[in-house]
Image 1 (spheres, helix red, strand yellow):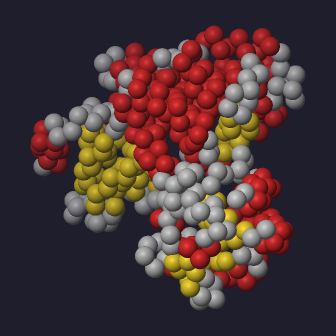
Image 2: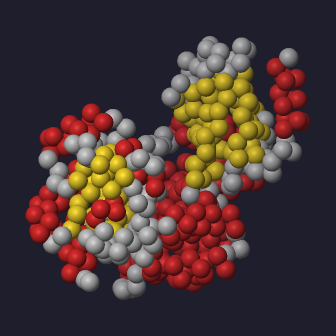
Image 3: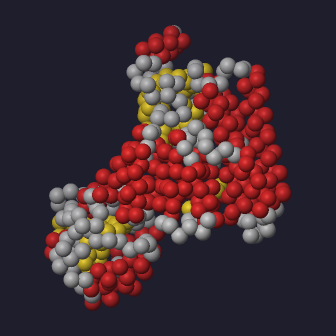
Length: 475
């Protein structure tokens, strides 16, 4: 009966969406009604991620249709346990597991079955850490590169020859795994997965060698010939859905710009460099990523001409949404645009409105009691408060806390200067939503005329303070 149900599902669903993957299966020993999810992080394409879900029926079966923009990793989630799976457009994957053994023991069939059997074995032999909180960040040029804690410890302890040998052995073992599997079942792996897996092996190797050479080069006295490995890692690859390939691209081009001693704005320099070093889908991803980072890093004015160029010249339109959506959001808070007026209640219950500060420079600081970076920044601004007040500058701290008690405790403990109110106290609309704030810390400067003013060139509190004082002196 289950087999017939699965076949009907495939036949009836396979033509619904050209980018849909169909995941179905059974979780033995689970409770009916338990939720199964497919999480698809496709930020690299369009700046978004999607979660699709279904409940287990009374026979513990589920079926999910998920949109997959590019062949990539997604995550099958049940009972807070998650398993990486490879999915591609028009894919089918049938999963059979026991809730007590998931995610360690899983059987896969369907079009993507062989792909995921190999993937499961690969990750069992090379356990990944998908928790970004465990990553350590170092700068390569002006770009923040990431590495897992365990790998960083290995880099610290091994010299160049020993580390290269370790990475070579890992790469060789993974390549043999891929070759042996595809040799035993020549037609089992899909072409997209084979290419993705080959990219996973090569660019994991190349990225970590590059990271080692750049970050630990002085410490371990790395010689120039160490970087000869770059000739074995093609710069242009169609497997943009592979995380390590994307990280390798960003690290390498950041290194190239630093080596050239370029004084250009980093994102503009990277955008232009991509035009000479990349092509096709690789260039579309990279350029869209540089525009996204520039917009997110308050480099709106510098990157705007390149945003326009990208929309005119990019042939891979799937990457347009990543920058157009962000442009529309940024444009609403760009210098010269009227700041959304709000009215809310401060910590003492007094009515406060942005309009009452017309004629003054206003520092709007969005924060939360659970955000340590926010708290540190606000402690520093307490030191600036007296000077800002003398200059007629208003500090308005707007918390996005859902828990008013936690907000009040933070205010009592730290005595933040200025006006303090909750975003949810907005009478017309949540104040954070009015300003498009989805993460903190984040700030805006509202000029004397009620429009957004130009921010400081960095997000350091001292630079923000200087910019506020400069604006207060202008007529």
